[in-house]
Length: 361
Image 1 (cartoon, rainbow, N blue to C red):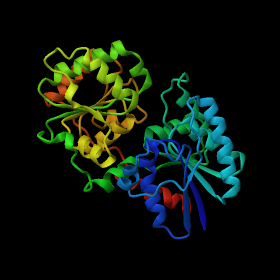
Image 2: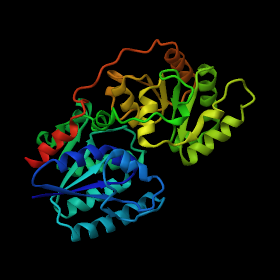
Image 3: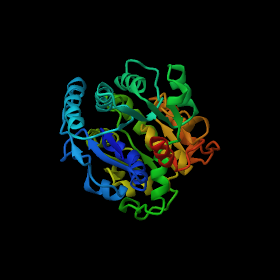
Image 4: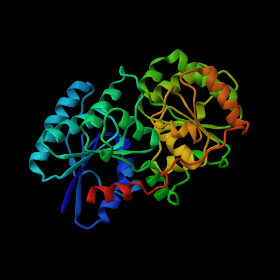
């Protein structure tokens, strides 16, 4: 019997591990436990998330809740080591590049267990970013590197990973999209709006939110170019409050986002919203990847992407944090002059199946 621990550190991780959980549940002689670094009452883990994804809540909550990344790393290491002491485990699967992910990876290898990294080989090549350090550490420790594409596999190879450790399994986000394709629910915010006749705007990056003057210029660009096209902006926390305040500062203009800024949606509502949009403006790599799968034009407010396939083959265009570039790209989007796109190799919704086959070999 294989005993697998699936470690998660934040809400987006659950969207990626949901297909893996379903694949394991269909596999004989394999069992798992789902572990979450945070607390059971984490407000980002709304009850609908797990029902929407059709998975159970985590089996174990480590209960770590703090802002300082170094403190968080130490506390997760202590709590996760305690977990591994109490639960028989053959393989630990970690996701993405959080500080908690790195902490779990370090503890796993110190205990001599097999470590698998889901979404390995992603790089910004900016060592000043904390997540870049996390990525380097996690990939360096991992026994199995599950990559989403050729580019990520090449990065892992160049950094010294042995070929037998690297598996290009595809993008597991596509598994979740494929599984939920017929389960999307049309959100109430689209009442009176036709599919394909609205834009979606999301933002979450701390650096973008911190530069309020520049963010205000970008919001003005979106408002100006969108004109009468509705812009739906489902946001949470600091992003919601910041965008509301900045938007109100130019509310005297003819077009604003004012009536379209709303609280974040459930997973199934958000899936419908983004898959039926005219286009998307976002700073989220996950949203950009999903846009490529759905063949929806996407503008990313960043100078790099973890998965360059979304730019080379997909629907994604990078504009950095430049309001003028955003305005120019958005004009092409609303005029229907977007580039042609195709799906990257193995972004076919069967990534979880490949992973489980490798784990059971």
